[in-house]
Image 1: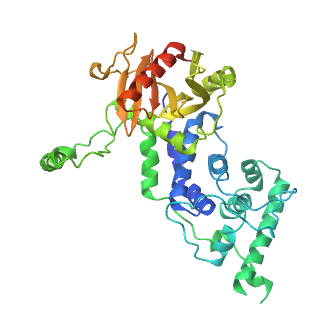
Image 2: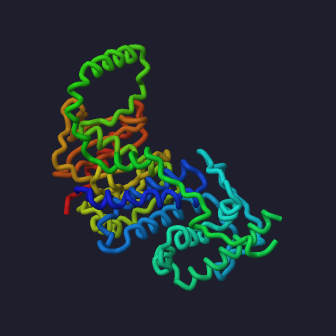
Image 3: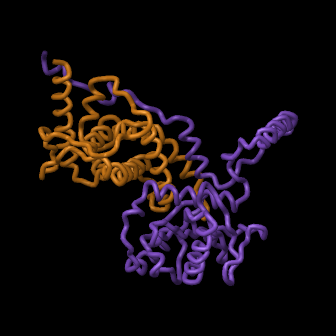
Length: 170
Length: 235
């Protein structure tokens, strides 16, 4: 079965956005590289499912998110999340995964450090909406949740970031 | 400190990370089924190539080229290598090791895999006392969509069967090994053994980390079981 060079070329135009997101999710270059490769493999494998005329970048983000959840969430225990989906910030976070291999990406600013402390689902929503500038409806589709949840998570995530920044600067 | 001091703009304040060129190149390579055509300027570089060849032969004679990693140009070795990479990736990333034997999912899995890949199976090996079926996946190998069925033997070895369309692929006589009434090719790559055979326009592979002489007998038996009971087709 022949591949689609146009689709592949178009998909590869978004590699920087995907890589940026992968770095903020994994904080590890080697894992980000693996995540991106796996994302593209899946995208090309399921290219026939992509609806022409819809947002390819958002579709790729969705694959990246699903790949991340499949391969990484199983390895690293996230902070506890309460029943309403809002993280229980006061719950201590324990990681039982082995130390990751590969080059860790340094956090250069307090903002990066604070962002790294958010649970992945909150980090993802903030990055997709605020950094990548995707409409909330697209973010909701990627995250497989209602728009209202996206809005509330953006609000709670920012609130938490402000709190962490305050802690860092005191 | 005022609260406004803790305001931020994620789009402006966060550094952006760019994908390294080698990552782009790796993805492009993985997606390009055919090797790039040679450019004419190579003709002018023949003398340099000759020098490089002499040096290569020199180092080879010293036994230092045991890990030669050039991308194979012939389709059989390129596909075999892609099969080994897919199998290794599954061993590392997939959950083959933890899966239970699940022969009951085969009837539902085969139509779904056909829908996803265009490779169907009139029948497929669902396992026996020696080799158990653990799952199936769509695969994308060397620019072709295909099917992978995964098995595990009683020693915990993962064995994967893959079928991808490869109409023009021919199997060289010198690689063929008689196994029962069949003559598949045996290719070894990166610590894995791969049986390769054709079924119409499909290339079929059976890959496992069974490489020693004693393992080879077992691998032949696995080939026979799967070859006899598995009938793939394009459509």
